[in-house]
Image 1 (tube, rainbow, N blue to C red):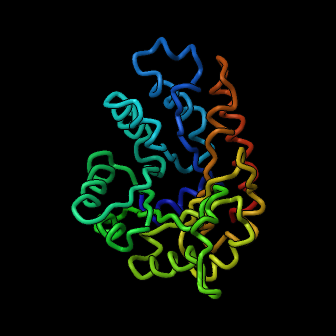
Image 2: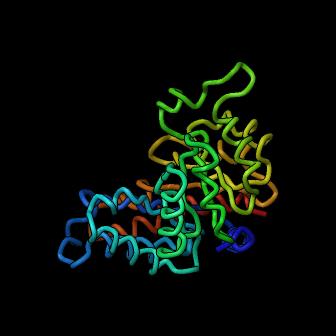
Length: 267
């Protein structure tokens, strides 16, 4: 799914919800453990329950990598099951350079057929450019994250420009709004206005809504652009809304509620 298809999906579904598939083996409902691949079974039911209320899915690769080869199989099956109907983000936070970065890009774009990969830009443009070689794919660059210790580095600056602003400014020169997004945490809504001044047309992937305390309204106040320009990710509050037999029904209800709130912001 490319930039234009993503915009059209948002307009058609009247929401910009991304469901995070942080499918922790320790937290999935116990009755699913009887299946040969419990993680995939969990994901499949979550996807079936939420697909009408979201435009994107974001599997966090750590929860699959930790399970070894079987976890990678679960991830591949999940991506295949989602197919082309939704935007798929591999939340891998890769950050290496050269041939290594090229192999990461190949892994997620060619072999797994994801639409986007999250990337740490600490090593500079060499960590990002290999991902931009793939047409109609996105590099999602970490800019201002939702965690408390983001302040350890991301707010460093010269009194005029912070590190996270510099990251966005520099990244704008490497690509454009059709192949670069930025991660901006919902727990820091006061910074969206200045971020939009730097990157008015790019999509922002926004974690931190729900369990972490961020809100849709706060993000939309300054984060929206003419094409919405937001993918608000919600993970735990949707996929772990229940640990019982009805976990998929509860996930449906939670996703539906977020989608209904987002509808107010899509014209």
